Image (tube, rainbow, N blue to C red):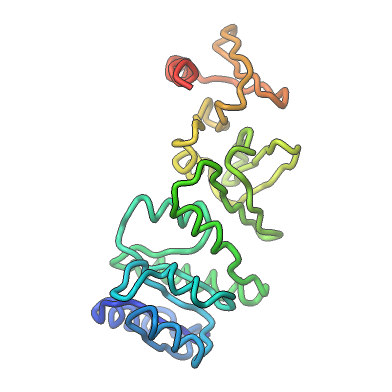
Length: 247
């Protein structure tokens, strides 16, 4: 794969070049560099990279500005950013790959391997719009749920509950769709917490906006508007009652 690194810091670019040469030499055949939006756009058009490592904040604009100027994205995209919870959550909602600075070699290898797999499956990035929306305040936020078969763009408000199935997460949606994702429930618990989702039980994450009743017998059960009954763990009982009272 041909790689392009777009970052306004020469030190960051040099470090990433060295890491790619050391840890990803079998997969990366050439590496080009650019320092900002304008030079990045020029390099993309000239070199047609297979994978682009893109900084979020640069001197002449942002990574999103570059994508907006570019229009169609026909390469694998990996954002490289300093830790910022708001930005990181936006990446996680859109299921776009990202690396935190300083870049961890193991995470870099994993990102390159994922890009290679996506290219072989002809799976190009199509979640940019979701990312742009996630970067803005949005009452009707969307999340990308991605598995080996498809990429689903779902409104958070359409998720009724999530159920752990080993290392997988099973989503139940308002239109009776069911989606199985190869990520653990813990990741979605953290991501969806600001939207009134709560871990009612070790295997169940519930959208409290979809709860129609809480039965207190037998330790507690949440009845959802799709008729599903979710058990409430004893240690979560008072916390869930508090959250329901404050909806």
